[in-house]
Amino acid sequence: MPFIPFLSLNHQHRSVERDLKECLAKTLKRGNFILGEEVARFEKEFATYHKAKYCVSVGNGHDALLISLKAFNIGKGDEVIVPSHTCHATWLAVLNAGAKPLPVEVDASTYTIDPSKIESAISKKTKAIIPVHLYGQPCAMDQINAIAKSNQLFVVEDNAQAHGAIFKNKLTGSWGHCNATSFYPTKNLGALGDGGAIITNDKKLYQFANSFRNYGSLKKDVHAIPGMNSRLDELQASVLRIKLRKLNQWNEARKRNANLYFKHLKEVKEIQLPPQENKITKPVFHQFVIQTPHRAKLKNFLAKKGIETVIHYPTPVHLQKAYSHLRYKKGDLPVAESLASSVLSLPIWPGLKKEDIEQVCFAINSFF
Ligand SMILES: Cc1ncc(COP(=O)(O)O)c(C=O)c1O
Image 1 (cartoon, protein in one colour):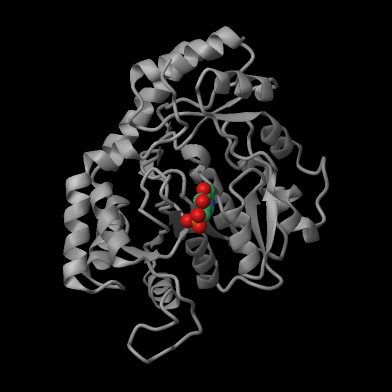
Image 2 (spheres, helix red, strand yellow):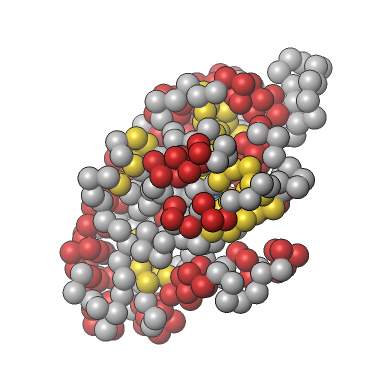
């Protein structure tokens, strides 16, 4: 039986190889590698994709979150609401802004922050909420924005895992005051290295981020604020421009694969499947994450059958050593802890064939 890797980027790169080589050659010839025309064009195109006014590209997703928080002057003494179950970079950006991450449990069936638990977590110190569209599953942005409005909080969406996802006819990454994203190579829209972006409709936020990412400077040798160096480079911008044109097509392939999983795994009682597309939410399946109490044995069994799987994420963020100063202990966030012990990501990348998914489903069915 053929080996099925958890992820391969070769398929997507093959389909745009000629364009990639051409754009790399052009950038090389032009000889301008930082904040040139490719960056400007990509920012315009990515903003347009989200029907937003402004985009500022940055060095990575962590910095996109950090700069967004800085734009709201969030720092020492402030708290920022984050989901209990997420990539730890979401929490880290809050820490690096000097503020305290305040975790709110996710809904175990959607993997996203549970809006019904947000309000009781808010205190005088709370300044913002970071909803994370984890695994490509959109958060309930209407409820989150309503809570934020009535409590005068900023919303910074973390859309690193959900490029192209839709909630109530509007793209994720276009609901918040600021929207941060990552172009880490494995993302639905990924660069050939690190990259990130901030999207907003607010001109002042745009101007702040634009300057902050470039040593606090908009004009050579003039530094109005003490910023940082976090710039997307010309090569990555030119690659992202090419890949952006393919994003919807690649997302459709992910959805096709997801639908095959739903079809062939729906009878397996021992696993919980992720939410399917419906009239309100249209996920883009950055990951296809199932839950099962038999995870370790299933993962081993699949590995023996030549099927690679990954756990996102095996240790809840609040129990990572780096966050020990926040003094959380086992049992404090039971939903996050239960997910950390039961989630398993199946291969979902766009180049997988129908037979590959059927092979995974056959193996899972035979295990149970
Ligand atoms: C949900 C989420 N937020 C933030 C990040 C941070 O992005 P980066 O690795 O580009 O800093 C990532 C990706 O790694 C992520 O998945």
